[in-house]
Length: 451
Image 1 (spheres, rainbow, N blue to C red):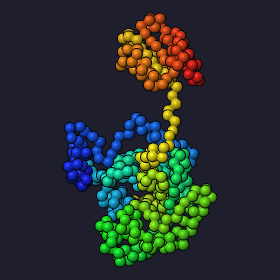
Image 2: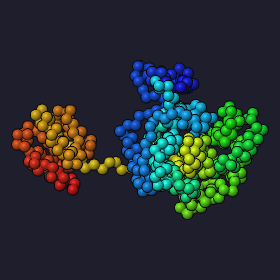
Image 3: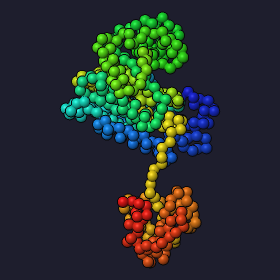
Image 4: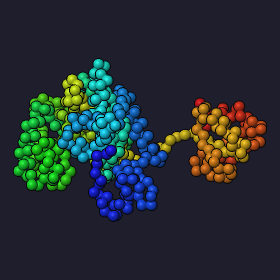
């Protein structure tokens, strides 16, 4: 069972007509539709998605990150311990369920905590350190659907766990996301960066925040009034206008961090300068997860407002919080839907899949049946073959071939079946010749210039 209430936006008749019955997933007319806040990825979309995944895989290989995959379901206590009980994700957005064995599980709302759990459970600390890991997969949060925000969304993340709490690793994580955006041709990007301190200096800053916001409590939104007592840092992350205006005069984090955090942050910035990665200092930048310490960062697209693109930071206390030994770590993640949205809106185009494809035309029932083996022989030889075996007329098959814009067609009829031959036709020049089936593959490769 999902422990979420119905959305208030569904209360009106207009919203009901659009979104349908939230319990059955139906709209008016009895047709099922995708659950609210989720979406289908259609074949036409995969040109973008494949491009993103390929760039991520290439970067992971270039920077020596190994892929890790964790279950979609985790013990809900993992996220309460790491993300924080008072965060919006845990209080409002997690999808939870109770199993028949009374285990309380949650659909993973983010990827870092499960990887920390896997790091401990699989004793990755016994391997060479640090461990460089990356992931790619679906996450789930019961958020209000809006541009760039879905309830099921895909994330890719890069994590460096173990070794020393060295600023060079912070810079490496930021660098790999900078290179990702460049490889995807996303321009007009701004990197914001800050330090949220450590468990030594942050408590003092929290107290100063509480003192400041206590004087303005009547102007805070309801959520921030609740955060004021237990989690005042989250107020800085509030997007509501009233809280945003108050933030401008709030105490600055960078003025309050200790000498050790100051040295670490300065070293990170020096690394970024050396790498020629431009950045903007944001004294009030915090992340919506409690496990971050020291460096935090967010990339934004100035041209398309979909929220943060890659974002992350250091989390030196997370492994320890869930039962492991004190282990330095830093990482970040990016929403794939947001990347695709920015690429689309920015007019970025990628070349389609370059397939040296041929079209197979059959003539008659006997040829159709015999075609199956002939087509399989071509595909086994690495030749991409399109066909329309469900269409009977040659004319209708040629229309399909024309839409695919192929230059070469193979014509197989009853006569060719008996003669064990096939006709190779150049659709652009209108020239054709007959070859025996045993020479078909080599002749097609020759014409397509396939080695």
